[in-house]
Length: 206
Image 1 (spheres, one colour):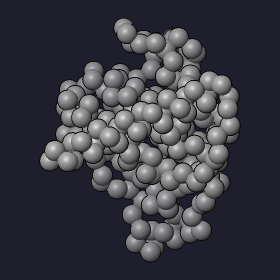
Image 2: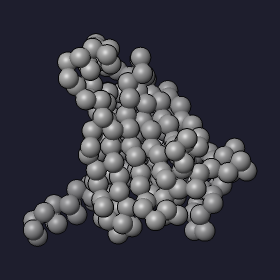
Image 3: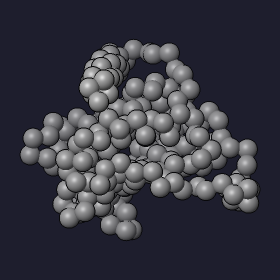
């Protein structure tokens, strides 16, 4: 048990150091060597980083990850920072619910890959939605208003886009779209015929 705890501490310290390095590079507009990034693994790893926070909030993160293993080209730590920011915002929004829940999905759409993070909070009001990606705009009492602008900056550097909307089921949903480097050769219908399930029951938390 102690070995696992120390291992988690070391891994978190390494991740924190990498994030600081990448954020500095982002601010300085330095170019980092791109590499293939497994989008599904980025989502899983980000949720694991937040697992103690999720449990303390009595919340739950569930996944619906495309089994075609969508891959994009870019910086894995910066992209993980994107998912972490979206997950933290979603968890914050979900605290308004008696059963806080965040749903994460990945989908291959033609030559693009989409990451969607949905919360079950109160949703986005009309006066807030236009300002979400503005620097220093925040609805949190102690927020800095830098999380979503950083998300947008990282995604634009990866030649992608990010948008926010209210979900039909309630709550808000943030969608990140990135150019894919490898898409499935099979169509969704072909995968279904082969018995491949496009939705998984993975979860973190309660």
